[in-house]
Length: 288
Length: 292
View 1 (cartoon, rainbow over the protein chains, first blue to last red):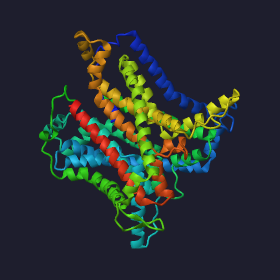
View 2 (view 1 turned 90 degrees about the horizontal axis):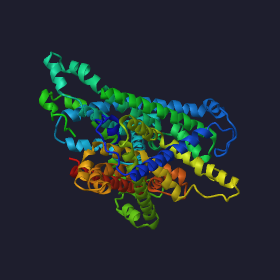
View 3 (view 1 turned 45 degrees about the horizontal axis):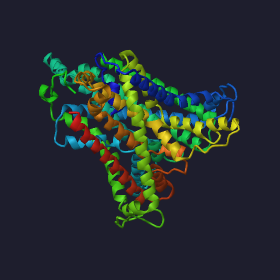
View 4 (view 1 turned 90 degrees about the vertical axis):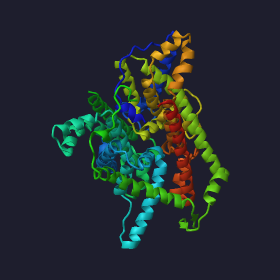
């Protein structure tokens, strides 16, 4: 739903009458000020204390970069980070491919059972992540038990099961974003290309794909972020010894609050800001 | 939606061959069948089974799990807490986000995208990180307490309370409310407000009678989204509520990981899922009446 706003073109600049009463305008400004303060103050505090030379996260002890240096020397954290990136890259690639194909199929064809297929496709967005997590935990443990019993193997849950789970929910998100960009796609362009002698594959590769590419990249970016950020589903579908970064951070946060976690959080925050900027760039390309 | 564009159905343009459809839908159908529908059926079956003495399951079909969830006071309390905390969080988000979205849409175009960008950053930021930020503020030796005790005040219990969870949920989900509201206001033609005032309505009345009803789809979308994300949340109550404020998501973890009561946990998951799907169906009913 929210992705709709990410890819929608901006409205024409109509002259909007500002709220007539000065009082109403003031109230709106005041609310906006407090809302943005509310959104950003905790983040600012988090970042500030990541530079604090004190082992308590709530006490300022002078400026230092130590926590950041320690992070990069921490082998466990670095391994978790590598795992996270590995999972995010592979699951994003798979989800983007599958999600784009299904978006094209759904937008081009009207077929029997389309509505039910639509519902199943979007169900993973609607149900809470914890439900998806326990569902997949139960499924993987049952299925692996069954397979190990039948074939005498010793398969266990690991990063592969996390990737499978991430693809399962990211197909829906990619499909939503790509379908939104297909909504503004003029299908007559395909017809025109074929009138000029292109076959269907050439039409797709030379016309359709370049035009919906910003949408596909936007979807991939969303999938990448969701995979990188996910704690709940990863925690339930991974096996012992295979942590992603959010899993590692979560277990530390539960034990104690240290500026070291502030430092990891600041880096994760920075990554998010970069991803938003990237997605905004794709969006402005789409508008042209 | 397609007012400015002529309606045009793609299948009229090119006769597509039949082999394309399975190729396009096949991979998604395969993945969602094995890793979504089958797990769904598995959890549905488990919810009707009986827990065995060893923590596994016996193949004795029963409705006991559902009956226990809806009658045992412990579980009823947890379910009810999830619903009311989720509901209140949704309401507070709506009360902050509606005027905020209105503020943004009334800005000149170049500022509008800047203000939306400011909403998008928290929207894309890891929930774990944003919740952790509040932990450093509310903790027993966190920012507020070190400030208060520094002034000679008493140590306050802020974290591990329902208030902390509520605060964390509102903080976490606010962007998810702002964006659908902004999209709905973007579709709203503000000249209608002028028309209303030309017909003698004052600003407040024009808002209540024209703008508010026209933006109901946005309100419904945002509310459903925030309610689902809040009532079924796991991270925020786990970190800001500790063991003191258990919501349904935390109880699910307990059943599946610690207590080894998969049948009861499965029944709760099915119940939660049905609640959410019900909410979404209400949403679609609202939007199809007003939007199209």
